[in-house]
Length: 302
Image (tube, rainbow, N blue to C red; front, top):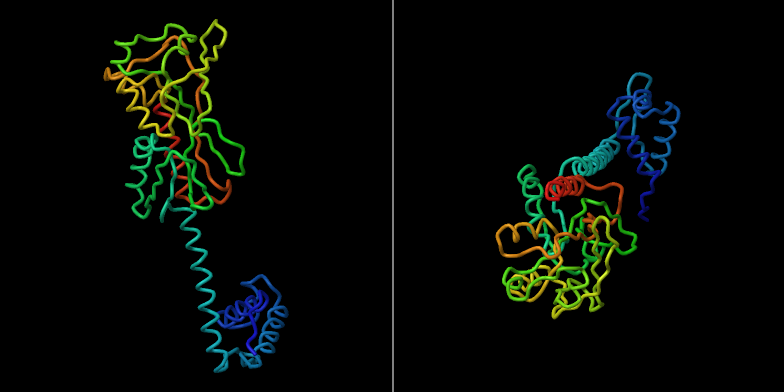
């Protein structure tokens, strides 16, 4: 009847391979930091389990029997496979390689490309699989290595690393500003259409503050509620209403004259940008370096 291998049996097989390669029990014992008697006992137990004599012993030398030589070759192959497994893990830990699966909001696409393209160039064994969606992906079910999330994070068992904080601006399309005018005070926002980037239809409140004045919290409404930053940005540029945008995305539109800032004397609390993973420890190099590259890039955009 075929016996299943136990951890102790695998250990004895490894010791046997070391004995054959070292040429003696005592030499193998020194390599393995064991006593010679302990090594000898393990070999005797292995021979008892296999029912075969594996080694010819003499005072001068130690040789494998015919069965022992065959067994040694397979035991040595087992050790090589274990060493190869350790090396592959070491490579994954120390060198970015393989597929990195990243989930991120659609509106973050340009920032992700700018941050990670240099990483791809520097490490040709690394590849990306991108999931650009404005819903929140299930990191475990979809095997996501890294998710980018902006704003307040829900309580969860996931691990979030702050990459940066983004200032947010209120902006409107240039044509909207000319035709409709702009709010002159926070309370005026309640009379203007505000596009709501949200995954729910809950009312949106905007908090505004400036030095020397009490903070203002205004309930706003608008004709559009959506979970797509790209769609709402286009609607804003077409004159559908006012929109809250990250400063790095709003600044080029303002500089090009396509949008104008609303209530420039007031500011909103910044929102955090996070790299989210399933676990904190034992991250492979591809995840660690991607987080570092994103953090370095985002620090230059704020």
